[in-house]
Image 1 (tube, protein in one colour):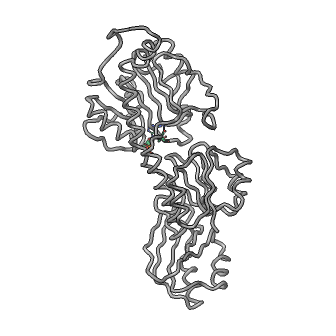
Image 2 (cartoon, rainbow, N blue to C red):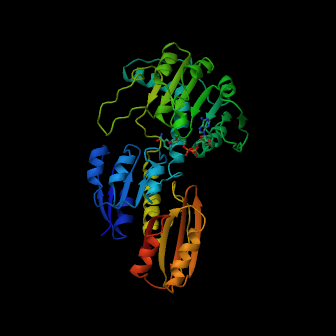
Image 3 (cartoon, rainbow, N blue to C red):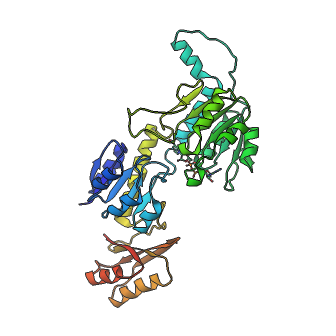
Length: 399
Ligand SMILES: NC(=O)c1ccc[n+]([C@@H]2O[C@H](COP(=O)([O-])OP(=O)(O)OC[C@H]3O[C@@H](n4cnc5c(N)ncnc54)[C@H](O)[C@@H]3O)[C@@H](O)[C@H]2O)c1
């Protein structure tokens, strides 16, 4: 029986989708460290995680039964994608399910910080009636600078304009500006212009320390800073200095370089206790709507990969989806992408008198993936011949 291990409170939808496919599911609340994860993966075919669990080369090397990993979140840099691809382990994520949740939190924080709601709220809870307009602004007409104009950044752009903000953005890729947003060709120019700077870049290693002392110093006096993307992108000591000096009048931070492993653990940060700073525990994408959609989406991808070999939207294998003709059996062959592999696969099948009913090949970098539909179950000698090909990375016969 196939087994799945789901960590970090993955939504129950995932448990029921995998369970209804006949997979035995072990769902646990927290993340596991490297050695506990290695132990827990023995005999496990599917692993489901969110952003805390690190799936390293060492873990993958020991996880001999693992077929696929579901990242029940957007980011996948907690997984060694190259190593997993080289072992034929497919990785799926949910690139779009919580986009809207992050955008709504960013908008709420922009309004809250611009009106200094955190301080008004705190004072009133302490019994102080601080009715004053000082330092409190409308967001209408203010300038929002978005760094990283991907799924989240571009949707924030549209909704912020709907609230009357002027939007500018900087992205290293050539992105289409939506609505009236203006594209800036350098981060510095964007920082010179914006009243509010919101980071939405991806978690590629090159973005470590993207925003530090020089960038905070470049921001306009009296401006506001938000980071809802990845913690390691920002130097928090520099952010603290610029809040304490009054150069920045507010900040909202949802992601941190070192985040506690589980609910209830102590949170340690330079940013604690600062005025007009909203700290949230990496909940940008954590709404019930998003979690439900992520659970459904990623579990569906894992199930599809097991049952049909579909790698559509996989982040590390060649993407491929072939409709299976009724009554056929399917062979999924992942191989090193060198000339002549497809010809060899087909020669082996022909030599054993196996007719091909349908076939699709795709490649991604050093890997090729071919799915072949044949009329009946393949004999052991055909499978052995295919397995013995020097280019074979992984071979699966599906129903
Ligand atoms: N806080 C949360 O709970 C939460 C939830 C979901 C996503 N996220 C994070 O939000 C971020 C954005 O997600 P997305 O789905 O929009 O990603 P995306 O891949 O669609 O967009 C990222 C964009 O950033 C751009 N980019 C990368 N490096 C850049 C740089 N140095 N300067 C300028 N542009 C750069 C890319 O070209 C791309 O357009 C990711 O880091 C993701 O992990 C956080």
